[in-house]
Image (cartoon, rainbow, N blue to C red; front, side, top):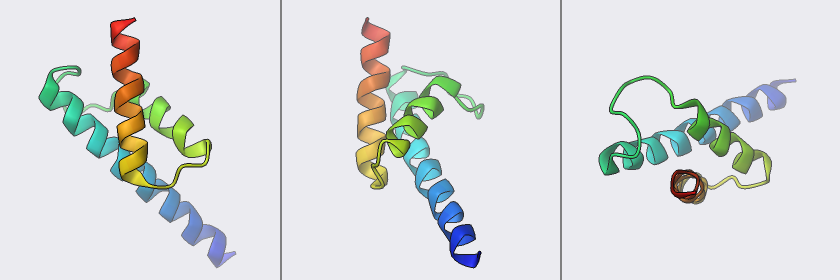
Length: 74
């Protein structure tokens, strides 16, 4: 049971850090508002990538940024 709890904490940590990296970049580029509120669309992208098997926070953030920006341009 303890192993499962540690795994959940690690998962939240990876998703949280990947979101922070992506959101920081997108705020600086002007793609999202500079507010402390969570951007739900970006968070959904990050979680989807994580559930797809990626565990590297930088890779997740980069993919999320690319998908978020592609959706803006579409």
